[in-house]
Length: 224
Image (cartoon, rainbow, N blue to C red; front, side, top):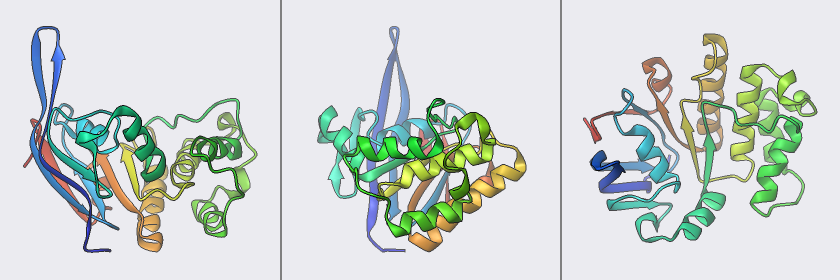
């Protein structure tokens, strides 16, 4: 694991306007994540962890404070700048697998490469990753023919096909049974340990959080 931070936030704040009321989702979050770290963020619903996830991923801008991802200041970026950063730097895995139902697993992965502008063949390292994910023989199946665990592993493959510096996982085991949850978490740990993939995982499950190097707890928009 590298000593340098790949994610930094300082006094990060986010306020949402709901009707005539301001809702403070983040209330001054300071966070540093080292390159190559596997960090788990835990907290109840409404704690601010998903808002933090969306800001770090460049999906929404902060209201105040600083956030730097891979050395770039997201708070000063335009929407188009944040979109480019996401394509180059961040891979996403969500609770819902979000696979396109009419495409095979192979083509779901290919869509991510196409969006990023990468049309070349898969490299040898990624072919090895597909083997380690246990889905290399399932690539020509559509999502309906795959188990939940297989669909999530395809979603992970899609998220890392462009070799992002950061993998953001939001409740990646939320739709899985205990056996498939364990398999997916072991895949994430293997990606971190073998490839040095930086992972920031949001979860409400302490057992899942224990797979990370470090656990950060949030409540009421703050790290506690």
